[in-house]
Structure formats: C-alpha cells, structure tokens
Image (cartoon, rainbow, N blue to C red; front, side):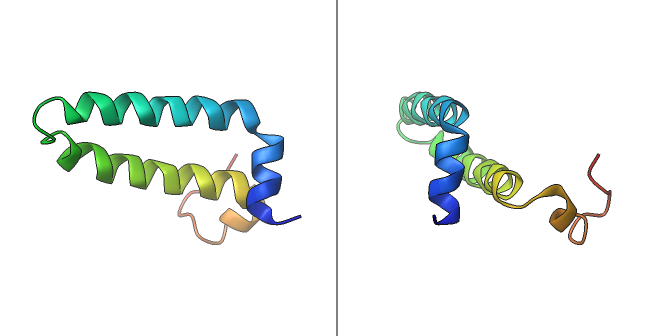
Length: 71
C-alpha cells in the first residue's frame, strides 16, 4: 500500500479535521477581498508539510533531520 494511502487509512479522523480547518480558514481569508490568502496560504502550506512529515516518517528517521531529538 502506498505511504499516503496508509497514512489516510490510519489517521482518517485527524485528516478530516485538518481538512475542515483548511476549508474554514480559506473561506475566512477570502472574505477581505482575498487579501487574507497572502498570510493563510503560506502558513497552511508550511503546517501541512510538517504534519505530513510527522505522519509519514517515524520518529527515529526524523532524528537525523532535527536539531532536537524527538521525544
């Protein structure tokens, strides 16, 4: 099974919750003439990347890339 499919299968409820947060933030950031997207898109992109790394890579593999070892 591909890694992304396995992550979706094991963490379905948190992923649905994160998708709901993304939808709400995108709607709210579009209200002020789409100017909120200037802040929202980079923050969501960066946060999503970190959450993806946390789900896909085991903590031992992240130890090589982190300055502080995971607990």
